[in-house]
Image (cartoon, rainbow, N blue to C red; front, side, top):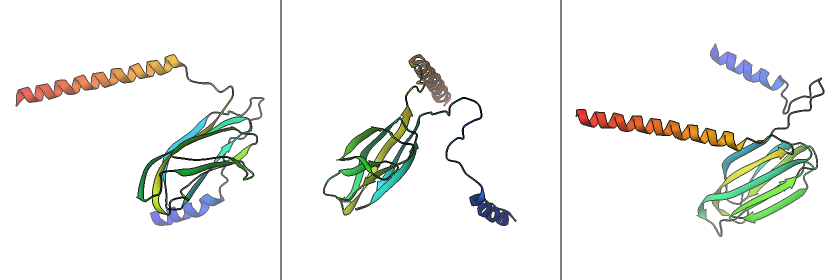
Length: 176
């Protein structure tokens, strides 16, 4: 019965409409243009390419950073190529280093393509850390005092936890 329900749900889900961004409200308030960013690592195989698409509105500031974390196999060098393309597929900028950063202003709304490739190395893989996103002018940034308060609270919680742990170890060793 459960299996039938899962299959039925899987068949019906593609039919449901899915939106990739918020629709504008009927009020005069503009759409929220918050920052969104992604940080993760991907393994690019020998002579391989990995591409990602990221949605951005016009007049945003896009950043795309990468760094080779480790390599395996026979590699001529540790470098990978990275490139950013606009929604029409035209190259915006490229970089070919062990670590690099590509920054640009978005001139149109759409999905921007980001690619890393390992074309120079036919016999070795590379794990590449990626960091990309977009932010918009006028976007609220966090108050530095709030960040300091969060840091102090975290350090205080660590200190209390550490002290409790030390006391527990002391009493355990004293009783044995």
